[in-house]
Length: 213
Length: 301
Image (cartoon, rainbow over all chains, first blue to last red; front, side, top):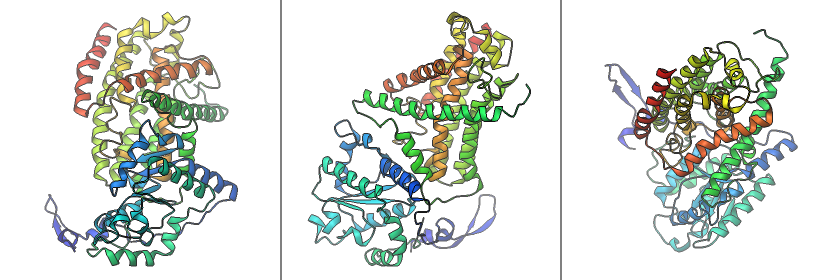
């Protein structure tokens, strides 16, 4: 574990001494909870419509596929007309697009960002690399199957998929959300131990709590 | 002013109308800005979907009491500003809670939400929030100065602190508007207006391309939804103050809708043309261009 994460005594600027335990003070250790649909069907349908029509993507490009998202923001493809926007902070985002290959080092950051997103949240795997490793199938430091580490809603095959197929994938995601079947966040909470097991198998320098919001 | 119970449903009706108008108008303006960039832009109902989605998120976390109170204060600022100025001049239904000294209170409410936001975002403990707050407060404080000068010039001009009386003095033809009777004050106030609308060139505080994304970095689900509600209410409330002080107020809802839209478009037109200022650049800009005009307006008044 890194030295800055060890519990220690710190002297403040006014001479006061206090204990610091970064893993306890800065992170939440509560495991994720399952949040089933709580309201009448008609209200849940309204919420699902709104969730489908307002998809906020976390602005986090993990691999080379992220370059295919740029044309979606600009006049040629303009994903904003489908209610798709990019948000810079995981707190406000609903959709995590894993864009292309995912190295183990990035996977750690991806898990932290994913866990900070609020329920319901969705994951789209972009490109062949997220399905079976793609052209990185024998690489020593990329993951092969994204589904082992995060619950994926939609895969978009291709290397790279064109922006049109991304849009098609988003439409498919919308259909799933509107049908009330995009419960990835609850699957993650339900099978939390299995996901953590898989994640820890590839991430060897695990220096964060098991769950950090 | 005497208080009647019927004013409460009237006030709620005002908020309802202004909220819906704000949701649609903000989307329309986003579409106009998108057309400038040759995009189609968001659908006109997008704001409703965003709002319902954020209210409908199933989980949320808190960082403490002030984190709760931040968006509440912010919304209080917007609703308070809207209710303490007469929305429709001469209408008993929509004059709401306006009273003799409401001009001072309105100035206070313009700042109130920002301060609440500062406390709330600071408690989230995110360094980006702290930086955003520092930038936001410096810029809003600076933009407030020409506005305050202009408002005092107008108050001196009409010898009253009641917004209703100021509107009354501007009735009877557009040449009676403050815009024509006291152009210097209006010029200073409109420059301040650009600075407080959170649109380019003065949107470094909230722009997602800058340090993400300023004060609301940690806000999500219902907290963010409250702030979005305020994001459509507050600019309109502020424009209502401007409309009443400088552009003759509105005597009916259609006149209200058109005037608010046109005043909003001033900041949009400037925004789509000019690139973004850094905070120290915008402060210098206000010092050089807006404040002297405001001082001149006071001196001549």
